Image (tube, rainbow, N blue to C red; front, side, top):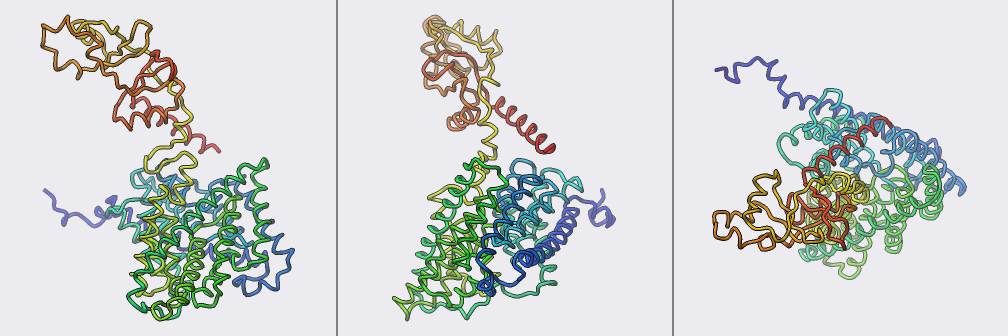
Length: 584
């Protein structure tokens, strides 16, 4: 018997668990440098469009009106062409695509996605798109993680961990927040806090953060005044702030997808739509330059109490409009920064009103703006732990933890109660993909029952005696007997369980008939139902097989459908879809 201590070091290093740790470090290095590259490209793109790389508020007055409208339009054309001709996954905020890849494709993401996302998001944000750079970095990092996993032939069961490593590294390097990066990957992307997932994700996040700090330094993301709880009464106000930020988050999600539906309905080529959105966006930030790009400049003004109540209130609605135009039309960027912006403005307005009413018992508006940033993030993503840690790490201020907890948990719980899906999973549900159910509803909704049902069914008349029923079970290889009336309409079903109690009662052999023994409360489907409709009925009633009728009105039996047949059809459809994607 050989002990573990006696094994050579080289053999220990060959273990899969150790190998994945090395891969996690490699992913962290690549994603860290990807984040550094992305930040530099963002600055370069803004300089290409406006000959300035600083915050837009510092030079907005010097930019002519025509440029504010033309540049986002040009950026929209470029992004539209990239998305339409190179990688459709680069469209939008990116995180749902990563979640879809994990749920349905074993974590496999096309290698071209990282390059396409870097370029498309940089053009969108550089030209003025009112979106964030964090969402793109999640997709870029996840694409890097997936590519590394595929290169080293990582099994499918561990591929999602590789993708999670990349996503964590992207968030960590962009926000300078390694803990938040880990929690984001585990809470949203992987959905698993197990040790096998935790260790590689932590290594990747730490590695990427170290690289980011080497180039950009270790400092808080926002410059903040001193923060402290003025009175214990404030702890009563923060749950109210959670409700306010929750409603802002719900509004953002609903309006964003309303704009997306509107642009999708336009009967014009897809590549032109981002240009239309860019032109409309240019009109918006020509009046309100605060919503240009990521918007950190405006957020810093609100956090240091340097913005009026009316402007704080108006910017909530303007930012929702600007971000919805950008993403709804097909631009590329994240929803993290818009969520932070909306939280900052709504919290600032809330704090302004509260401090005016109760100046002795409340902090300045900037304190509520800071906490509300986490509230809107939690309300959109349904990931309160990530929201709490992101704000904490971005500010390095421990005193905000308790208010953050109250606000973020309130917003997340309220919104998840009102609406099942987050801003990420809503996009997937609209495609027919239910992450919680683990199935692609879109695929099953395009297959009908009659395509896979079994027409070879065993039927018996209602008047058949128990002895004949037993004989039928002996001679026919069928778990169920379908009972029909004189016109061939289904009236019930008999299983082995239905006859077990009377199986040895010989005196009842000629007294009991099929009509007496049959189960009449049946779950049925029709031949024209979709497989998704059939699966929903099977799942709701907890059965494994359902009879198929010609139509809902006419109960004429035409076949039977099993859950195993649906699973086989689903797996076949998934394989065909993956083959199509590989050849696109």
